[in-house]
Image (cartoon, helix red, strand yellow):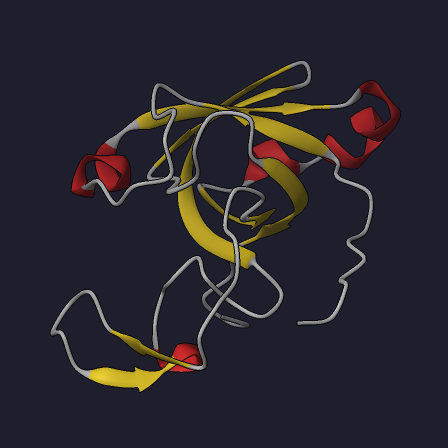
Length: 130
């Protein structure tokens, strides 16, 4: 496994989920994204969107296998055909409902990342592009 260099995180997740285990409740739960002050200007206009995409680092995941059993059906498939956090670059992406923006805090619904997870980027969700 090679060393991977991640870009600087722009913030982190605040969630009631503390352990990296699958929990279906995450997809309907409320969590918060705290943005670091250096990136405050980057939030300008984000409140115009109902949905946003959160790119984050699975920082607690260790190692990966190129073939894994898919959680949904148990089928052995390539890692790129799964939503597993055990990936070569340990990057996750989730489309969430943006509930509110208060200063440097985004309140979101449906983020499947645990408390303290580094947020790498935020992008608006657009039916036209996504």
